[in-house]
Image 1 (cartoon, rainbow, N blue to C red):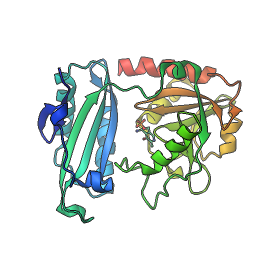
Image 2: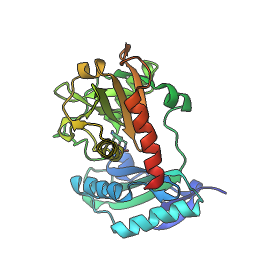
Image 3: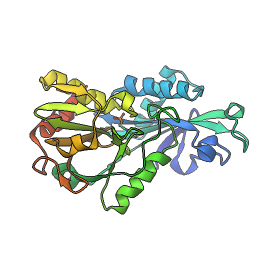
Length: 285
Ligand code: PMP
């Protein structure tokens, strides 16, 4: 059976799910999206994802042509019709079909919901941890385009990802305009030093990751001290442990950065505990 895609209110076959070449999502990367996990048939952190979607829409003055409740129902329907128990939902809202000019207000937004499987990194990397690099490309300045907006324009991240691929590694750290650590191309970054878990602040120019929020919450519950703090690349180099979080990536250890071993160069105990706690949590909530 072919996958069914929810497109502007209808469930259509994957091969028939088409968007106009005049859609400003394609012409200009004008639109927003969410990447959401479904565990045990339940949309994980559903309300947080939809809230961020509506916040992103507000940020770019995009009127989503559906209510929150309608989008929730549409996501649930898409998962159900495709008979998924565990999957990944890509929910996108494009500015829609317009003319060739930039003006977004002549467009009629389109909503598309894809439910499919995803694996961001090979399984062995989840066991061994990642070697990553720092990208030379700077994370986009929040006053140019806030990284808090999950927009369809990922070129900044893609340029960093290309640097990673060129270096033969799966991921790259992006620094912000001040040289502080921001995030990776599709994940948030954390470090552990002396038992404390640290992650950059929102004001360091990051996407406020839903998984990041869950991990901070798990730290609190488990009595692991944690804080949001501006971090330098050097802080990562001298960390005991580093790990990444994201809906697609989940929680994954980083063992090497720029050819430096982090701590002992293997998955550390705090990371291990948080990975286990995360996997338990997603099946309970
Ligand atoms: N930063 C960026 C740039 C991302 O694309 C993602 C993935 N959505 C994240 C962080 C992690 O966010 P979340 O945990 O909400 O998936």
